[in-house]
Length: 340
Ligand SMILES: C[S@@+](CC[C@H](N)C(=O)[O-])C[C@H]1O[C@@H](n2cnc3c(N)ncnc32)[C@H](O)[C@@H]1O
Image (cartoon, protein in one colour):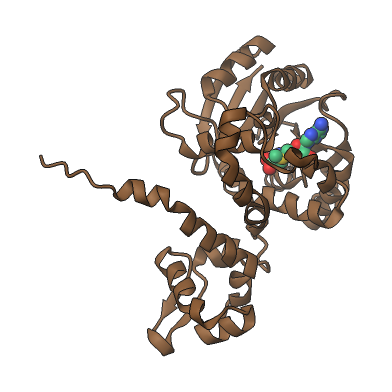
C-alpha cells in the first residue's frame, strides 16, 4: 500500500482559525438572523450588514464551502440562504438559537486563546482575571449579558439534553434535581417528558428568575421548583436523580470531589448522579473536543479541567457510589452516571 504523507492535515488545523473566525464574524454580524427564511443576494446582504464590496463574495462563498450557507446560482445571480442547521441554531428568531455561546467565543475566547502559550507556560488563566477583572462576577450583575450567557449554555447542551432524554430512562424517578441548572432548561425538558416527575433546578440567586420564567414559558412551572443557593455552602435538594451538567469541569479535584460527595449525600437510596460533560476517553486519545475544552478551562479558570470516565469512577467510588457507567450523548458529550 502506498501511504503518501502530505501536510494537508497540518495546514487544515494550523489555519483552522480562518474558518472559525469566519463563522464567528458571521454570527457577530447577524448574517444568519438577517437571512432568516429568505434568500438574498450578496449585494442585499452587503448593504444590510454593512460589508465592504471587496469582502462580500469571498465571505459568503467561504461560508457556502464550509457548509454554513446554501447558494443557488452563480455570479451576479447568486442568492444565499440558511442551511437547515444555521436556520435552526443560528437565527436569533429560532427557539433553538445557540449563537450566544459563539457570540461569547467571538468577543472573549477568540482573543484569550491567542495567549495559550502563556497559559501553557504559567498554568494561569488568560481571561479578564489576568488584568484584575472578574468576568463571572460582572456577568452575574448584568441581567442582559447573564441572560445571553445562560441561553448560550442552553444551546451548547441542547444536543446532549435531547440525547439524554432518548437514552436514559427516568420513568422510575419521582424527583430530579439539576445542580447548577442555570436557566432550568433541562428541568423543563424532563418535566415535559415525565408527567410523574417533580424537578428542581438549583443555582445561584442571580439565575433564579431566568429559570422561573423559563419554566413558565415551557408550561411546567407547577412541576419545576427553582431553589436559589450556593452548591459549596448549601445542601443539595434531596432527589432520586441529581444532574451536574458542565459543572464538575469548572473546579479543581478537591472541588469536584466535594460536589460529588454532596450529590451522594442528597441522593435517595438507589438514586443516580448524572454528570453531563465532554468526558474524555480513558486513553486520552480520541475526544479532541473534551481535551480542548480542558485547555479552555486552563484559559478561563484557576483550577478547572475536564476528566476521563476512570477519574469520574474514582471520585464517585471515594464518595460511596456502587458503580459508574458512561453513556455517549451528542458528539463529544457523554452522561457519566454513578449509581448509589
Ligand atoms: C458552566 S454552567 C453549566 C450550566 C448547565 N448545568 C449546563 O449544563 O449548561 C455552570 C453553572 O453553575 C452555576 N454555579 C456556579 N457556581 C455556583 C455555586 N457556587 N452554586 C450554585 N451554582 C453555581 C452557574 O451559575 C452556572 O449556571
